[in-house]
Amino acid sequence: MNLYLRYFDREILVTNVDDAISFLCNIDEIGMNPMLEADIREYVASDVYYPKRYKIRPRIYFIIIKTEAATMLDFKEKRALHTPVSSDERSRMLSSAISRLNEDQFGWYEGAVDFKRVLQVPGTGKFQYRDTHFVAQCKAASGIDCYNRIIDHLRQRVDSRSQFPSAKGKNFRFRFLGLCK
Image 1 (cartoon, rainbow, N blue to C red):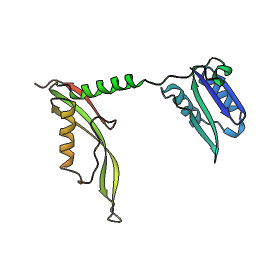
Image 2: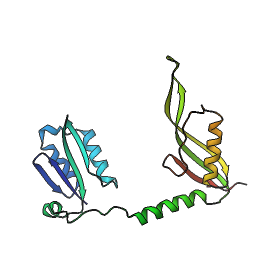
Image 3: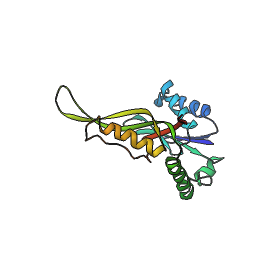
Image 4: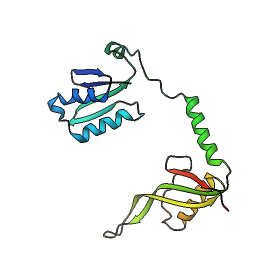
């Protein structure tokens, strides 16, 4: 995995993050600092392939792009494009997640839900949504049963205007802890 960096007319294709950081350190306007360096290292280590823009000043950015290109010419002629996950692979991953959710296995589950909870602001008496993280352990027959039990529990205890996520979304996670005795 190589990295393409550009700041106005200065550009480079490097093979590792250390070379990228040394390139950016040589540009005075960027003002490299430990937080920026850590963020760049995190981006390079992640599996995200979208280009990353870093703001220097209003309307002034530098960009980092992950690429498979071995040379600058290959990159410019778009010879080494990263192929995204195909729709077949995406649907297979989604179906495996849904089948895991519906898989019957009675026992203890730990479920975590991130939802929008309606709370009253003490000073004004008005209501606002707050992001809330809730984790519970319960006996359930499957992942979807765990979700239903947690949501039923929350609906009895929070304002009815609160918004709960779908069991299939990224805001609900569960894991099987073990069989019941």
